[in-house]
Length: 454
Image (cartoon, rainbow, N blue to C red; front, side, top):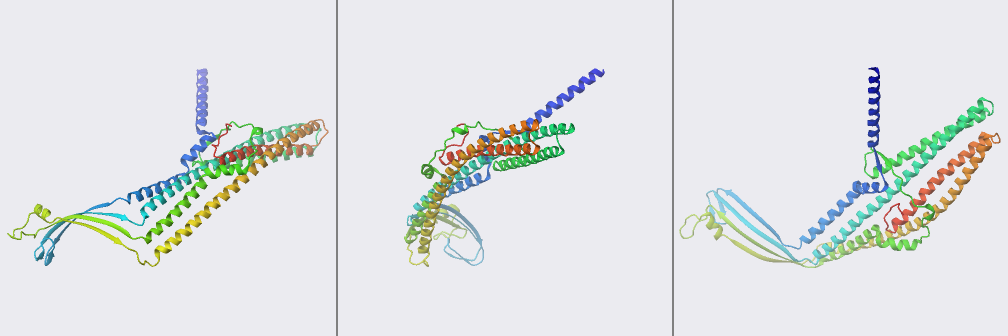
């Protein structure tokens, strides 16, 4: 009986452990870098706002196209009058109460408006293109931010792992120094130095973990993800760092980027919109011509037949009281307080400002591209130097550790060598991801899709 209970207890514990393990695996969500990019593009609020603005511009374009067509309106009216009044339908003064009703259809169309309708359509097309380019600009900026933050998180994750390894090494050294101190082979100073190294490495672990947690939080914010969701990063298949192309020419990159970059397209379409607005404003100098037409009928309870004096029935009144109208209206502007002239001047100023903004966007792009090329070259040199420094520092530490084990080096020398190795390793990790990121920035300005498979 006791054996059965023990077996049942063991089985229950196993089941609980399995459930806990499955719950833990479900709680963590694996997020590769491509998934992070797609998730951010689908959920980021800035991207959604840019799309909303483009949708509004699309409706403005649709409205400007529809403004070319005639309008058609219908109206009905009814009333009850009593006392002395003039009944227009009956054509006489009435002292009795009168029930009246009427209906009307009217239409109006602009025949000529100084080409303002056509120019407005063109301006709205340019504005829609500008807003669509803005959507692409926001997406591009978001993709670059996600890649930057993701690689920063991977960097901090590797630094955290390296700091934990260094802490484990320091703990091993502390155990060795403690054992040697107890048998008199090491001094109290050696023991204190080993404890100090452990404390320093524990602080490095804490700092690295905080940096990693902060970068994960920033990544979640870019993806509009709940901070409480536990995510796990996936290291992409990194290309051979030594094979990364670095012989780029800033001029060639700029020539490619200036024709495809959404920022430049947006500025160009904005300039085109401003130029078309000048023609719209000039349309105010022209006369406008419009046509209108209407059809209606009326009923009055006091309307009578002129010959018989009998009240006319409802249907017969609607037929007899029908009225139609057609009209043309020509409006010639003579003086409107210089409003049109001032509008044209303001439109020209806006156009010049748009051209300046377009040139400023090109200048900024040229500067950024040149800076990216310089950063790429600097990152390549830094990666080479940190790789050599880490190899040398690691070899030096191993030699000092061997000397320390046989009593030929003191604890201060060992601690200094370990600190130098730690710093060299951290710098090398940072330099590796920085070189990778700089290469992807170049791909970004060349219009290539950011991926880590080549």
